[in-house]
Structures are given as structure tokens and as C-alpha cells.
Length: 472
Image 1 (cartoon, rainbow, N blue to C red):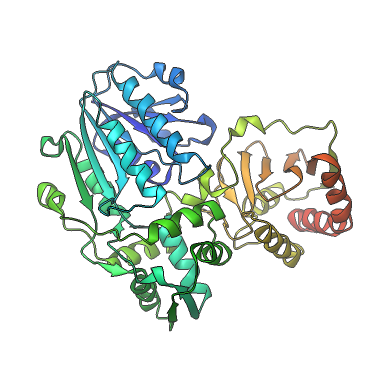
Image 2: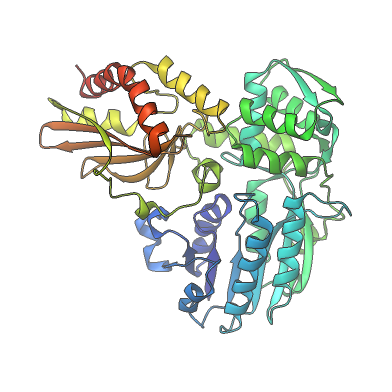
């Protein structure tokens, strides 16, 4: 059986892929950027990777005709102002492309949309479902609310809030009820519904056994972590203020924070849970889901993180568009130093950022991250998913990894902070020499003035950085 998997580089897709392979399916992964797709060598005999863009119908013509089922796991999460139209158009292109295949079933992971008044984010989910339902295949829609798992946006936001704030003065939407579900149960339901005729032409709400307010979820997290937390809900915090509150305290982008606040004002509880009976599943409780997430964190077994998706940054782009570092019209800070122990140097480069920090002048990096937040950027809070492994497309604080090849000794980063220009930071180990290059391509006079204003700091930061990496 051949399964088409869209969104294979996303949070859910990365976790669903191994589950499908373990069940013996041949999986065709449809990705927007092949460079961001990474799978273990053991998966290769069961994989086909196609690069396509759902917003461009012609790119979908390469989908093979002999697919038996497909997963639609594509969500934009408000990456642009017209994301609703973009999502609907993508669904229409996908539906039309499926007409040229023998697909029997399409499974769509959506959001719980039981209220009459929905946020734009949830309304877009409903519109996509209606568009997909026009196809000739059997559509199965699984509607989830808050997904709890290591690396999920919901879990990371809860974690940020509780870990950082002993006292919270919070907006009234913290009293809104929801029905969280563990990521493990989402994957079990996604795989269990596949080729299950009881799930054909049907939609199901999926959730755990607990119905909780967001306030109760925060306090539940604190209880699991044995922390004392105090939350005071006030009615005067507007949606805009609430968005800023989430944005500054957590690692989320402002666009994502706005979409989440809009959705958090809507109750997302299940109408029923018939799917559990059909699949003979007993979902984990909220506390069990939290403990499972902590277990993955402790063992450094985070399979996927929302932070590594492009939605966590400023814009969607192909990594290959920026992998060739320009020189014309650019300001360049290039330093090199002899290396005694190449293994140790490479290890330091591959652990850079996140909890490790930047080896020298960390307070200056933190200050730059804070300034970035003030101007609407991503700041320094995204950290990194894995402290020892780096893949193309991963996030390291306010950088995006464009290229990472430890055997070659090269790491290339692209800045996703708010800048009057574009910036790259590259580490390249050639023989016994480390070459560290910071490149900035300014936009207009403001970009040039920016570079000149930070130039005095660069001498200390970049000189100290390369010395620490080399081990001097």
C-alpha cells in the first residue's frame, strides 16, 4: 500500500512517518523544500520524496497515480494576512490533484470547530475541510484541540509561562475550556483511521479525557513540576495586549500569538468521542501527556518541534534561496584561527546556541534578542530542538540552519531576526583552520547605518566567539 504524506517536515508529519513505516507502508513524502526533509537511512527503502508546493497546482502533477491513501497535514498558522485564502486554494489544488490518482481515502487533521462564532484560524480549518470533502475519495476528518507533546506549540507555550512566571496576571480567555490530547494518541488515531471503513466520509473530534480551562492546564503543569504558581485573571486585557503578553513571555512569533489568542477565546471541547470506541483507544489524561513529554525531554528524544517549522520565523522560504552567501554590496567580518583539536572544535560548533549559549558575551546576545522582540522579531527564546544534532532547516535561537554537514566541517546560519537587511553566519573548518564569517547585506541607508552602529560590538563578540570555539 502506498501512502501520500503531505506536511512531512511538520510537527505531526515527522512523528507520523515512522509510525506508517513500522506498519509496512510505502510512504511518498510531499515536501515544499527537500533540503528540510531528513529521515534515517533505515527508512530509505520505504520512502519516496517529492518536492512540490500546494499553492502551485502544476507542481502536484508529479504525484504518482497509484497511491492508495493520503494524509493532509498542511497548516499555515497565519503566516500571512491572506492565509485563509491560501489554505483554501492549497486544499483545492490538492483535491484536484487527487482526481488523477486511485486514492481511496484522505485523512485531514483539523481543529475542533463546534462553535458558531470561530476565530479566523479555526474558520480556515473548517473551510479546508469543506473543500476537501468535494473529492471523489472517502474523507476522514480528525478534529483536535490542544496537542500536548514535547516540542508542540501548546506544550512549549505552557512550559514557557509556568517555568518563567511564578505570578501571572492573565487575560480572561484563560477561563476558556478545552480538551487537550497527547501527541501519542493523535498518532494512534491517525494510523488507526487509515483504511478503516468505519471512518470513511466522517468527521470526529479527538481529545483526551480531561476538559480543562487554560488556567487549569497551567496549574496542572505546575503541579507536575512541583512548582507554586499563582494566576490572577483580569477582564481588561484586550486581544492585542494578550497577543503581546504571549509574544514577549514565550518563544512564539507575534503572528502565531495573535492566531492562538483568537482561537483561545473559542471553546474547543469534543462533541463526542466515538472514534475511541471505533479504534478501541483510551486516550492519556492531561497529566499523563505532560509526563510523557517530560520523559522525551529528559532523554533528549524530541522527534519534532514546532520551532523548527518555518512558521516560527518571519517568512516562508526555500533554504536553497539563501545558501549561496552573497559578497557584492555586503559587509563582511571574517576571522580565522588555527585549530589544535578539530574534533573538539566541531563539537563546540554543533552545540552552539540554546542552553549552551554563544560561548562569549552571552549577555550581548541576550540583549540583541530582547531588542529583536521589541521590534517584532523572534528573539532568542526559540533555542534549539536537539543539543547535539543539527539538520538543515533547524532553528538555533534567532538563526535558521541553511546547511549543516559535520563531516565537511561547515555550518551556515541565516538570521531570522528583524534587520534592515539580511545576515549570514558561517563556520567552516578547512584542514587545521577555522574560518568564521559574518555577512550582512544592507537594505538602503538604514542598513548601512545599522552595520556601522554595531561594528564596535562585533570586534568583541566575533573575536571572543572564535577563540572560545577553537578552545583558546
